[in-house]
Structure formats: structure tokens, C-alpha cells
Image 1: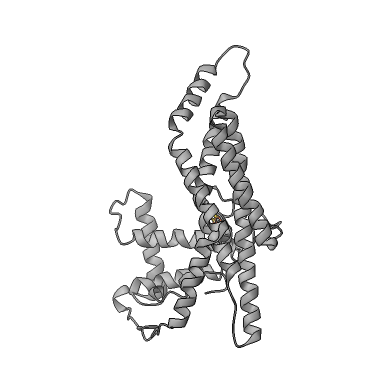
Image 2 (image 1 turned 135 degrees about the horizontal axis):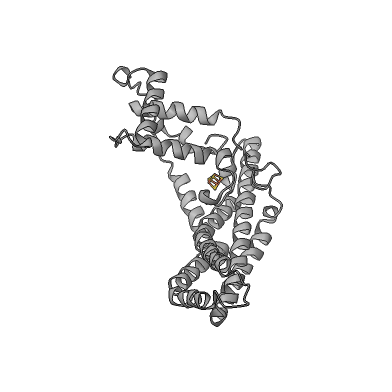
Length: 304
Ligand code: SF4
């Protein structure tokens, strides 16, 4: 993998295997060399790009937008009164300027001679590793939380609508200075936080556990050491993200508890699971707590 964690650099699909691929490869190379980006910021973020202050410092985000634009190019916008028509034309002009006319491009077949020989021993080890990750108490607890939170969200529509009605009834009462609009927004915000993070936790905790359980055997001790360090780094980073995600989810549940007191028991159960997850991560991956995620936990903020 590229040091920045960019899978596209290894993917032969994107390395000159088709004509548009060359333009995409050039775009990717441009993005990779741009120094405004924080290296690896997207490795330990929560992928909530809509809410991220670092979009302009994140290669993954910028590259995703470029690729989207590229995909749209396959279905041309045929209306010159729309900005998208001109965006598309600008993209096309850039490609032509960099590579010449599409008709003159030749597929050089780069990378087509790669043969993959499966290693049965390695496959057995990987299968065992996957099973160990799946059966680890932290992974199973994260899945339990996800299922319970999902069920709660699915079953809360009526209760939440009742809260909405109460807010509507209360708004506009004389001598009442409560900001009901803000209250409604906060409830929406908390629901979104719970909904976002309950699906993020299992894969992130799974990744932390996976890196933690890696056995870095190699005949070259130097290489074994490097592998062990990189797995430890990844376990710490993924563990840190899980801790942040747990903290945000717990804060959201605490707030929901105020609005839905009759569902307190369920909410307390969620909080208890989150607390067990937190303790489990701190115990199993002690380096997670102090891990500094590139960009996100550093002093350098987003671009102005
Ligand atoms: S760092 Fe921000 S913009 Fe980049 S992938 Fe993560 S959430 Fe999205």
C-alpha cells in the first residue's frame, strides 16, 4: 500500500488499463503530490465527510470528488445552460491538454503480467486470523451494540414524534423563553450521531482487534519489527477512533434520555454496553487513548 494508505496506487485498474484510466491516474498523481493534504488523515476519521472540517486537507475526499466527476463524464450533460456542462467540458479540456486527443491514446498493458499463486499455508493462517477477530469479545460486543441501537432507532419513530408534538404545543407559550427550535435541532443531531456511529463501531473495533492480533513472524527480524510496529500503530489509531466514536455516542444517548424518560432502561443498557466497550479497548489496546490521529487530534486545524 502507498505510505498514505491510498489503495488506488496499487490498483492496476487505475494504472493505464484503459484510456480514461490514464487521465484518472494523472489526476491521482496530482492529488498525491499536493502538500496541503494531511498524510493519512482519513485512516482514523469517522468518514462523516459532510460534517468534517478537514475536507480540503483530505486526499481521500478530494480524490473521491474527482473520481465522481470522472464517472459523471460517462453520462454527458447535454445542456449548456447548466454549470455541470461547463465543469465537464473543463475536465475534458484538461485531459486533452495533458494527454492529447483520446483517439491517439494507446493502452500500454502495464501491469497485465502479474501472476498470483495462492499460498495454502497463508490462506489457513488468514482464515484463522479472521475467525479470531470475529470471535473476539470486543468485536462481538460492538455487534451487539449495533444491533440493539439499530432496533432502538427503528422502534423510536412514534416516541420521537410524540416529543415533536410536545415541542410544537409548548412553542409560543407566553413567558416561556425556551428555544424550542434549537431543542428540535439538537434532538435531530443526537439521533444522527447515534445512527452514524452505531454502524461505524463494529468495523473500526474489528480493525483495531485485527491489527492487535496480528502475529508478525518473519525470517528477517528487522522486517518483523517493522511489521509489528505498523500493526501496533494501526491498532492504536483504530482504537482511538473507536474511543472517540463511543464518547460521542454516549453523549448523544445521555441527551436522548432527557427527552425519552420512559425509555430510560433501554438507554441505560446502551450506555452500559458503550462503557464496557470503552473499558475493553483501554485494557486491550492501552496505546489507543494517547494516540494522536493525523490532523484530527493535532494542533493544525482545517484550512481557513
Ligand atoms: S478526514 Fe474528513 S473529509 Fe476525509 S474521509 Fe475523513 S471525514 Fe471525510
